[in-house]
Length: 462
Ligand code: ARG
Image 1 (cartoon, rainbow, N blue to C red):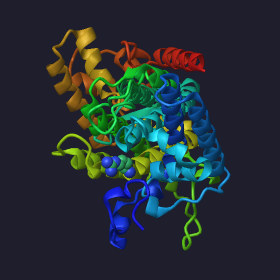
Image 2: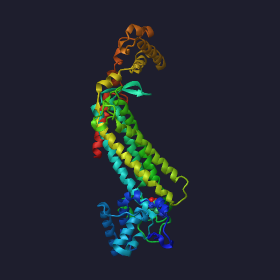
Image 3: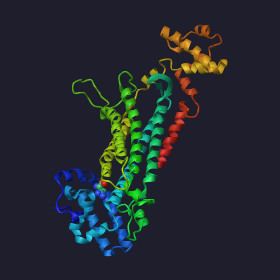
Image 4: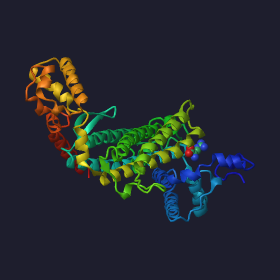
């Protein structure tokens, strides 16, 4: 049997292997709701403009709604020989209402149809991800507020560098996620144009009303060039780029969680809800969810890479290569959504050991910069010179295996004669933190203000 949708000039059926490579129904059936929504908008427009009769239009719309329920209640039978979601639905419509179903495809092609479906899908997914990222920001901001003054070591090179607060660290991720959300919103703005009516590639001779379908489908406007509309997928690329960057951010937090829960750090613990045991080592509690979030960023980048390579060098307009845009995108966005949910759960779940963090915050001469700053501020030394003096004091302390604030004043004075008793004030973690009041700095009062302002802002978003 030849294909009943396009088999007019064919006399025999495709080879089995042809069907195997060509059919997309196994994965694009996921677009059924978007496909039907697009078809209903198109069909209403055909009725409104008088391209088909109002009766035919109503008939078709009714049929499409019935198909929607069939798919939703699981009674619809998908067929591979009908290739894709578009033809599966149209064929069922034909069975249901007869040849009048064939009028639906007037002034339309699968090329503008699939471009429309995919835009609707990606737009909806962006909105869902935005909501999830909002919820993750809420969790992080509350943690930040609770731990606005809780000292933890700030690291560079994963070496203790200067004290910060745990709240400050949490808010760093709130900022990252806010930019991630911004990138998704930028992508959404640009994707929100309606390809429907571009037809196969050149537009159509029928007097269609593209503003009508744009409004029905909540697009801002129709796309301005029919060739561009059916052949570009940059809206998917932009979304995958935003998704990849988000996943990269999540993977950094995931890695920190893995490090923090280790016995060597002991900064936080995760409950049974977000850890797993070992089948051989009874004592183990592994942060698998965090490790998987860390790992999954790879497949996000893979999806982006796969699509950009698929599109590179493709001549205008549509080529079947573009059917390869879907599977990796579904996989990437599904996994991102899963990662955000897991991360939100872990942030809510984590128990913070403020004592361990505090102890570590004061280790490894973390207030050495405060000492150097004191020499600059009080003794008016150039910073480079202060840096050198501090280095000598640190190495003295290291030799004797004592913290900076235990180095006797006269030993410090042997290195720099003008140092006074006052210097000890800046060597404590609490004072170091309190002094970091520059805008964006880690002083607890800054952090509390920033956390509260985020909480308010996020609440306003609803
Ligand atoms: N299944 C196809 C896809 O996803 C739909 C468009 C087919 N268009 C065509 N000219 N064969 O890309």
